[in-house]
Length: 121
Image (tube, rainbow, N blue to C red; front, side):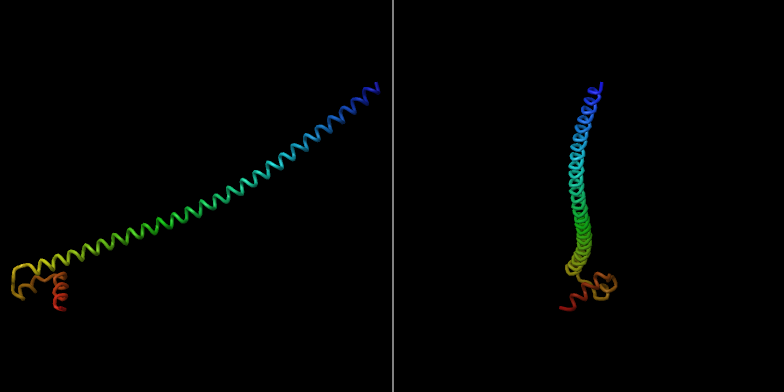
């Protein structure tokens, strides 16, 4: 009976050692997996930072583009107004002759600008 007991103890000890080795190997693998996860997390954070910087850049570029469009529209409006004044000046120059008093009686701010510009010549 004692021989079986000693054999069982040896078998149990061998099984425990094998279990401890498997457990140790699994812990090593777990450490490797955790290290890989840490590296991937760092890369993801770095990519997220890149995305945030890129988004900020795009936002600034979009704002600049919007400002440029607004300025362009304002310039177009101003140029359109200036073109209207020039057309009115040309119409005045090409219209039939009237007395100075009659002309002044119908003078608008645009006409006044034209008259003052012409008087400078």
